[in-house]
Length: 223
Length: 328
Image 1 (cartoon, each protein chain N blue to C red):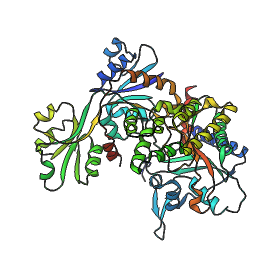
Image 2: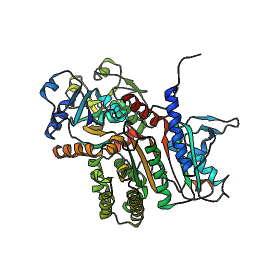
Image 3: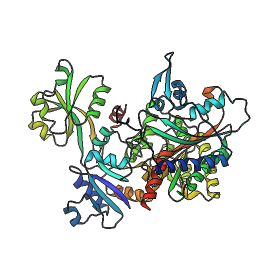
Image 4: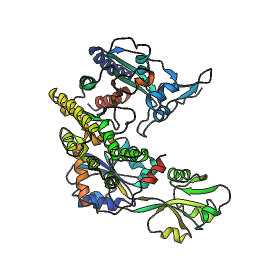
């Protein structure tokens, strides 16, 4: 049996429907319950549902063998994991946004950036030689510029509606993010058959995607 | 006085300390059985030594401080660097091969992954210096396997082997710049299939395709057979030959169930020059040991000669064994 950690929230539903199409199904009863650990119908997979930022933690420690989590979380946590599949789900962008499209050139003195993604933000501005003050928030980041806490924000954007409704525009795009299958390095060797089965089952149901290359920003964040 | 303990440090008390000593004794007695001489190296040494021995990126993880004269010192982050210097200088006249083993704590101020909590780890290690080729590689692999089975882990471990020259030969053949080579290395290391295919699509060489399907990089003998269909440059072929030779020996010893070939193990390319190995044990989320051939290392201390070795992490092994005992 292998254990798969699923990021709760935004990504959960599309991850479960992708897994169902790959033949890995959870019972309705289980899904409707409030249990955080469930076994699939075949008994080959155990699922645990945790906060997105905790998925890399469980997988890196080998408590979960695999995980499904957004690339935004992986870039932010810099977890040492294998990333065999881009699942193409929960597609969104990590962007820099501000009230004024010219904010980058207009701000006087040190720029203040509010974000949930302090690592990604400091790597992005650091690689460009722009000194910024990072203000770490845990939610409702779009409020910060309007209230004067920050000059701009770094945040995840799916449709752009929240940005628009809070009077913000995208100034720069940092990276694209989609749901990824991540695998623990030891599990990849010690449970190679089970992990291999999961990877190939998922591979057959992933929509062929036309993703752009974003290796460059990956490097920015790692440097 | 404070009751606080620095991050990554811990006590071992009673049964756990005893188990830890037992594991150490088992490893040291296996080493001794193969005529490995124990060596105790200085705990504190010049930072330069480790920078030369491990490369700056790894050495920088160490605890550093200054000597009376202002020179930079480090609390040893590894033992191999020091043994290599000793072989090349102090023992340069001694007849080869040299066989050394040790059980020694090493220290890292910054750990490599979030899962590596400890900043003090005891390494159980060995170095075989002055002899190259398959017999030497096989000797250290057999040592590792013997220690693990003496610890009653025989069905629960996996040693992956690779020869880093397979990747190096392909990278030269692709004529990649430093940045592109590092990018390819990272994509293979993290098995990013989709991005690998995208990266390699721009390569005209057929050989690159050998790395485009990460799932074909791990397995038994068939991995080498598959790789040979695509890889033809002489540097890589030589490496494939020696990996196959090693695999033949592993099979003839009946150890193939505990070993796996992993051409995707390209994590320490700048350090190893041939064989590279990683040791995994059920119940540990990260590798509990690693090693390989480092023919380039002693040369930087003035006497170039072949060398191969590995280390096991005593603390990680003890943790796995302790958990198993409490589950029984």
